[in-house]
Length: 592
Ligand SMILES: *[C@@H]1O[C@H](CO)[C@@H](O)[C@H](O)[C@H]1NC(C)=O
Ligand SMILES: *[C@@H]1O[C@H](CO)[C@@H](O)[C@H](O)[C@H]1NC(C)=O
Ligand SMILES: *[C@@H]1O[C@H](CO)[C@@H](O)[C@H](O)[C@H]1NC(C)=O
Ligand SMILES: *[C@@H]1O[C@H](CO)[C@@H](O)[C@H](O)[C@H]1NC(C)=O
Ligand SMILES: *[C@@H]1O[C@H](CO)[C@@H](O)[C@H](O)[C@H]1NC(C)=O
Ligand SMILES: *[C@@H]1O[C@H](CO)[C@@H](O)[C@H](O)[C@H]1NC(C)=O
Ligand SMILES: *[C@@H]1O[C@H](CO)[C@@H](O)[C@H](O)[C@H]1NC(C)=O
Ligand SMILES: *[C@@H]1O[C@H](CO)[C@@H](O)[C@H](O)[C@H]1NC(C)=O
Ligand SMILES: *[C@@H]1O[C@H](CO)[C@@H](O)[C@H](O)[C@H]1NC(C)=O
Ligand SMILES: *[C@@H]1O[C@H](CO)[C@@H](O)[C@H](O)[C@H]1NC(C)=O
Ligand SMILES: *[C@@H]1O[C@H](CO)[C@@H](O)[C@H](O)[C@H]1NC(C)=O
Ligand SMILES: *[C@@H]1O[C@H](CO)[C@@H](O)[C@H](O)[C@H]1NC(C)=O
Image (cartoon, rainbow, N blue to C red):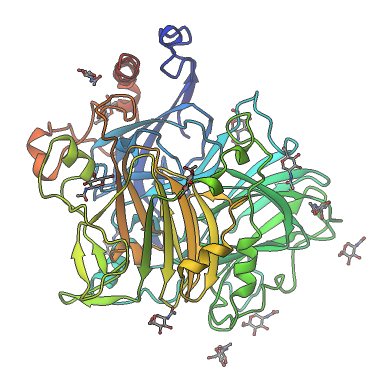
């Protein structure tokens, strides 16, 4: 079990006088032991990454403006970083947990994240960002609740259920990494997991005996909030609950216009909340399904996740065929129209009492335009790589943010092209020069043959347009300038484009990446550097005292006592120390 403790620190904080710090914002502590466990979700034994022995990991359940402290003990045999997909880390890319902002936490070391979930609400998830580890687990949901005083645009649900859905391979993540390093494709996944479990035996031929499946227990007449995250490797999934409407209410921190769906495509890295009312007669249990999308269904039948929705008055097991997926193998228009139908509820408030729509993004002038073109993999220097604008990203040994802090030269180039490069593709540590307080338009143009999702750390962006064909300046005429939803992960269909707008008001280095793990691993990634040209302490938090050093700065790193396998007790002993660290940290924040 996760040790969890929350208390209102500094409730009479001096900051009340200064009006500066997070006065009274509670601290929520988590202690995480990241280690391998043996599991066989699809009937084949393998090493899976667990947190405190759980796979998926524990839910991070916090409230707007809480300070979250997570001490991560790395008991894997390789380094680890945890990233918080969709958490904005205002002024604080130091805690983002990606290779451009943090040194990896070596095996048997620990590192303590501390960040505030400032002005956010909604459903997100965390995952290990290095070494293809997400393919082995290590992920879990993040819930950021509204503060009590802020109204939510729907009644309080009778329960809150997180579902992690995702494709799964029986090979472990090191084998998958090796395949990609050797220029191979991953091929078809072995199945789809729901909350770390294999499919219910809906078909005796397709599903072997003895597979553990997920059961969701509900009561008739009640309404539950389902938070669904696609945490998989690379497969878009169609999600549906037999005989039940799913009322979409939220996605990645924005309240949406509330609409019923019988099924919804959830692409890799995306999160959605649905309200589902138990309005059926429970003549049997019901199927919850997540099936692979845009693939030949007759070849990909095994890539289907099936869980069970069980009413307390259920009269029997679920049986018969699964509810049908959309039948549109040759035509992605249905899916694109579905994506376009997801809109912002401009009159609903989010983390603050004022309506979401009071930020009129459609009236802001764009300052920077980037067209990011994804091509099918290419061979560069004998290696199979993926590119954006002809550049395949190479991680620098020194995190970019640290390099800036210590004025280490030559770690990266601030020369990422605004348009696709002509000429041969290359491998580079090339960064986008963001304009602080600028308003950036990014067009993702997908020239590959599969759906890709793109994610940006540090921000929520507005999804303003999506269409087939090549984007042109004229495409701007079709943009939704009014109620495009603000989120952090968008899908880009093959042979199509997606346009986003983002207000660059958050100082730091921010990762933009393909969420599809194979595409990302092979180089589809870039950072946006956002620097305040004015010298001030107000727009970025100082480097944390516990920052790790590596690369050109490795000489600054003090050695750490290695954790033994059973480290939980030493963590508890270290609590007072940790608390002191937190006090010091908060004090620095106050006195800037
Ligand atoms: C992954 O599997 C290979 C065998 O296929 C094995 O050699 C390796 O130790 C495994 N790695 C992990 C982390 O489980
Ligand atoms: C999250 O915490 C709140 C209390 O802060 C509790 O009411 C709620 O049930 C929790 N949600 C989950 C999913 O654990
Ligand atoms: C490791 O955990 C201990 C508490 O167990 C804490 O005092 C220390 O600061 C942590 N190390 C880092 C680098 O965060
Ligand atoms: C939008 O939010 C408002 C304010 O909370 C709510 O009353 C309304 O029902 C919502 N509209 C839709 C279409 O979801
Ligand atoms: C089970 O799946 C197999 C293979 O797809 C199919 O031929 C068969 O009809 C299915 N059985 C039932 C009862 O649906
Ligand atoms: C959604 O479906 C539910 C149950 O089927 C129904 O009661 C509700 O009125 C529908 N809501 C909307 C906004 O269509
Ligand atoms: C329950 O609902 C199902 C599907 O809507 C229907 O076929 C069945 O007759 C109903 N059973 C009862 C007992 O009402
Ligand atoms: C799917 O694959 C099967 C078996 O190879 C083939 O017969 C069928 O034509 C394919 N369907 C489509 C829509 O391509
Ligand atoms: C946007 O630019 C136009 C001219 O290009 C200018 O007239 C207008 O005032 C600008 N709007 C804002 C909000 O800056
Ligand atoms: C980055 O952009 C700023 C303006 O935002 C400009 O002053 C600076 O010269 C640019 N740097 C490079 C290397 O292009
Ligand atoms: C990729 O780009 C080429 C050249 O512009 C074009 O012919 C082809 O149709 C594009 N394919 C996709 C899937 O966008
Ligand atoms: C920023 O804070 C540091 C101490 O944390 C202080 O030494 C420095 O003078 C401050 N700089 C500005 C511009 O306020």
